[in-house]
Length: 482
Image 1 (cartoon, rainbow, N blue to C red):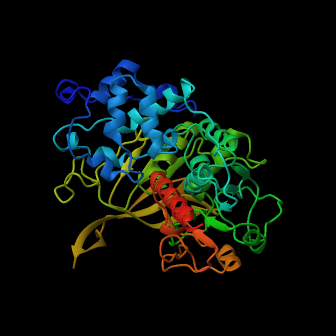
Image 2: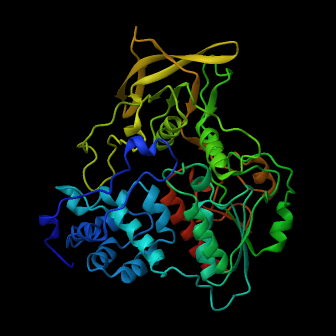
Image 3: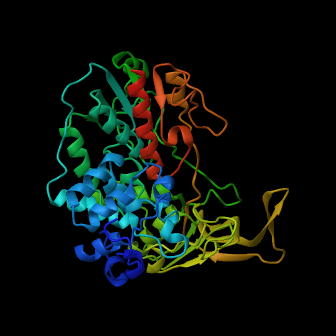
């Protein structure tokens, strides 16, 4: 390493955020950048650890120590070349990845880990600024054609690698624009959509064909799609036109809650809420107004990242009050003994949105929704406790702990259950597994020999970085197969 003792001299320094009073009044990205010299200092903290567990933890197998060394030396071109060799979209993961690598950083075993995610983002943005990231179409085509259904992170990654291997790739997206969860699920204040457009332009220049407003078969895929009268492409026609069809349609069936009063107005799925806000900002809502939190008492059910995004969006919309509730126990602030380094620890996460205002409650279960005139007015909740019985967590209500939370808008952010692409599954002659995901045999093969599946469609909802990794793996398998 450039400075093998850098970690002894330099403390971890994160980029930080724009002031709260400024950022809650707009939807621009909240994270700021460190000056170039300070970013290089942060790279100097990457120690000569011998066995880089950061690489082990990363789903896309990033070679962090190597590009950290180049960054420390000011070799931005070399750092970018090494980064891009493993990660096709570091401008996405550098903004929204939870940084599994940092939890496994060897320095983090006894100190604060290296700022790997922010270093990654600095490298790719510097590479764009220096003009290093240019279209690189394949020198020749191999005569094989692949259709990719779904332009989320998994589909884009598969298209990226297949195209560079010489395949003629066409990506079909049912929605108006490309990006899937990146565009319609993640708020602009975490990922400005211009970075998606910048990458798509590069991929088009490299020879990939993108078709939007192009639903295939009778199954609606994607999420939050604004209803439009668009022609549907028959699955059989697509099969006949390509050597292989890769389904990367995501897992977008949100988990619902079945309690009395669920029928009241004002109880909506989180991604419907987030998607409409993103569409409104992009001017593509099609006359449909976003679901606004202005002047309302907002309750977010679900303590994960999507719930956090709802908190940040509601604050920007001018919510009167925001409360986020979670049925699970409050996570510890430090790594628990049962999740030792280098494992990913379940610890308390406080996002930029949480810092902008709102209350967070744990150990809370929703019993019913209370309404008047068909509209929700409150949540009937109860405190719970968790125990382990025969190795399994068991929830029990605490007697007499019932209480109410006033609510004019309830956002359900409880994750996803399964794909439920019944029409698409039927049209392609596919099977679903017990979780409702597309069943694959071997690696990425489905029951239809000409149709493969990757990403959330076969695994269930997960991280953007895992979707990218699965898309790349699918592309590698297709290259070997065809």
